[in-house]
Image (cartoon, rainbow, N blue to C red; front, top):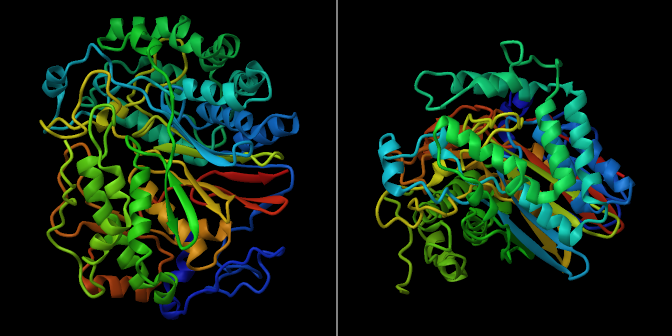
Amino acid sequence: MLRRTFLATIPFLAAAGPVAAQSRADNPNRNRPDVGPGDRIDGATFASRSAAWGVNGAAATAHPLATQTAIDVLRKGGSAVDAAIAANAVLGFVEPIACGIGGDAFAMLWDPASGRVEGLNGSGRSPRALSLETVRQRSVRGLIPSFGAISVSVPGAVDAWWTLHQRYGKLPWKAVMTPAAELARAGAPVSQNVAYYLARSLRNFTRPDSGVEEVENFLRTWAPNGRTPSEGEVLSNPDLARTYDLIGEGGRDAFYEGEIAERIERYFARIGGWMTRADLAAHRSRWDPPLKTLYRGVEVFGLAPNSQGLATLQMLNILETFDLAGMGFQSAGAIHHGAEAKRLAFEDRARYFADPDFARIPTDWLLSREYAAQRARMIRPDAILTGLRPGQAPSRGDTTYLCTADSDGMMVSLIQSNYRGMGSGLTPDGLGFMLQNRGEMFALADGHANIYAPGKRPFQTIIPGFAVRDGAPWLAFGVMGGDMQPQGQVQVLSNMVDFGLGVQEAGDAPRWRHEGSPEPTGEAARPGSGLLRLETGVPRSTREALAGLGWKIGESDGGFGGYQAIQRWPGRYAAATEMRKDGVALGW
């Protein structure tokens, strides 16, 4: 981001020594070494702000109104789950370019009663009436189109909320849904980020070759004056308010079996599509024990496939074999090894990650230390790997992230998305939300683990993050943005664990993103080593050294994710947010 160009001109930062590990003493910023030039008088001088502290709870979301709603729910006696659901519902109105009840949701949380991390997979399945043959007939260059009915899978978010609330909610369900309904009815000013992406979505959905069967409902909902709103203009969504009212009164059944399901079925019958009320009624979220690994004494958790959480853990396993702290913060060595670890993990991601109900996934092997060591030995400090392939398994038969915490010690890490852009471009009549295009993420090649099948869950990019230290919850965190998510999670953790940065500083630090790995859709890797994009805050000397190694360096394009986090300290929480988006973090 251009707001950090002051770092890009500092050659000595790349050669700086490692930063002292973060202490868990009462004052987390006391005597923390500086990590480079900037304007702040304490902590990392390049940070955009300090963390928000609270003793009774905290919330961090991608929009101020969602964070305020979460804090209000906590003040009324709601649990961290209640706060997360209420905030996510608000985001479906104020941040429709990233999320909504037409999409899926995943969550991990610390349950203080059981003393462990719980995981929830809320991803929906493909329509049972849609055959592989039909999908292949509609494909473009062997890939499923991004927009239109062919890309729609069952939305899982509402059932995920309901499932979480049934186990952990304190407030009545209707009370959790009411704030979002009232806000959608009254309207709210459109933020800068949302205004930009609404305009871009309008261009995407109205292209002659978009594949979107109808755009009138999109225009009615988000461009009522013939254009999308500018920053600061007030936009309401009365259709969504009514939909939220129905869900508040009838719970998940109102969405999957009642009036909303009937409207979705009639909509597809009208425009041509395959999803039915029976598809919706059959959907259920699943409690899945999360996978975990140990990174320099910190337990890091990730959800199993069909999520890509395993990719984060694989990258960490590889990187733990190297002395990143000794290489230096923002150094060419640290970024080079991180990008190579990503490339190795993403080879496996493209080959193996899929719905475990349909494919045998060698998860234990992919997560093993032995395999990580084997892959790490391939990385050279002075050259880029060539001829990458996935490991040979032993033979055996746009997105929103938020986190909340409460006075009982519960911490929730939740991510929710319509997938690419706003989703499929399809807004069912009178409902005020867009259906996701997550079905685009299936592969079409015979024998692929992620090949399309009716009633199957597609590969999922959305991953919540969670970490435990010394047996206690330490960090609920996430980084939005498709393929950037595992790359961003690894960078945040490394910034905190290897380089001693605070929870806000770790997110403000300049990021890198590698592009060009093969995809679980069957899309092949780009020729060569792909493209390594660097934010403008990465030091010039680091950029030059990486280019000298042979990396093709790309400029900052604004696609480095969106970070939120809550860190637990004894007796209080520290909440952090993202300067790259419109987020706000608050403590209570």
